[in-house]
Length: 119
Image (cartoon, rainbow, N blue to C red; front, side, top):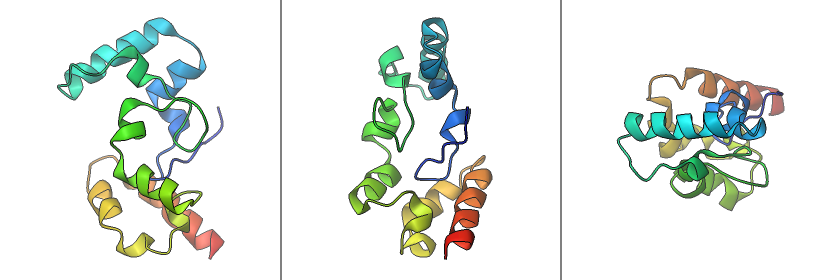
């Protein structure tokens, strides 16, 4: 699978929900839903809410990305390819909060690189 940069800089093609959806692996999707229910302490997570075709692509979105991700909602509203193309990138509070989470350094580096190469 090719790299698919989400609005926040995450590579959707590395997401287990995306991978299972694209390979139409129903057993894996059910397992991911169970794992995420426990991990995020949320009984609302179902197999359907795990299925995703990628943040910036047409089609299915995971439950979180579709309805809860403020970064995605903002980027869609501003019609930017991803946050690297936003004029408010350096001052965005949503990104600052997101980049403070463990495991988001690669997403930040991706967006920083896109900004550097497109400005």
